[in-house]
Length: 369
Image (cartoon, rainbow, N blue to C red; front, side, top):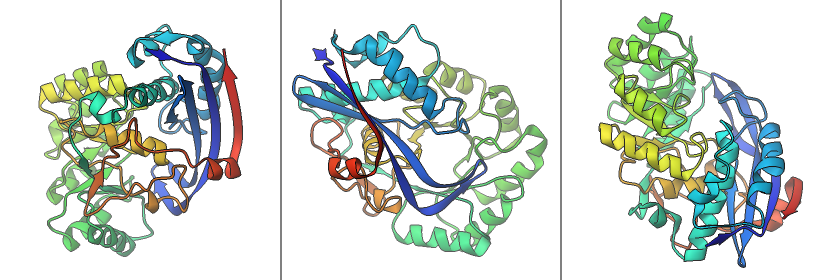
């Protein structure tokens, strides 16, 4: 049984080691919210991926934390549940706000796995002991800088290179990269920066033999993605558009894409992520695990999720040292030759670097029933 006795919320701000530019804008740091659930002498931890401003999806950090502390935690503190799915059902009356719900649900999964003394991936049904990883590269100053960044990461063994693109910065970096590296697995991510009026521009990318073009159109428009897919040879990969297993079923049924970037927080937690995985597998559509510039807690959750069998394309769970001088966990999460080892300790297999967190925390608070 899963008894929730207390909770902690912490917020830390981590400076990135590099400037990360996408079609949304430029990011140089990330504000990381952490949730710790305590029960029976064990703790489970999760990391929120909502942002300060609603750029990626509609949720915000301030709104999500208010919901967690004032609505969700009062529903679970002091109560006992059979498993994390029953705990999630206790929040079932509330619509949307999937990232906030995921923050609670994912901590419960970690807590439960630690109570059962098994790795989270095993509990979810995964079998891999290592997962393939790629890298996501932000918009660079020019083509030469792009090729240089790609070269560094190819030499580090990453098994997929993803370039961020936007109107006016699309074919040029792709062409330069493909000419320099004719055989690498190459993809692009538009973060909803295009419309159907850009079909010709996007069709020009077909010649570069990419694995997929990720989320070119509006986050809430499956119909236009289905139309665009009929105009392209390159498969479309859906990210922001998929918030549930039902979304995945509808998207694949109408041909809105052939690949899904599965981000656990975006779909509301690990149980729904597993359902999205299963739906995609039934359609013969591969999935891969996307990243949101997570610290070590979120990265560890992503690695464990990626052990499920239909994660057949390299994900964005690249080495933590790419992003942070000091991580929020004690254990290093480092890829070797494009393979990330799956932590084998119970739960997500990592522990909070509490000394560091306390030194940089912008907020810490405790909640009890």
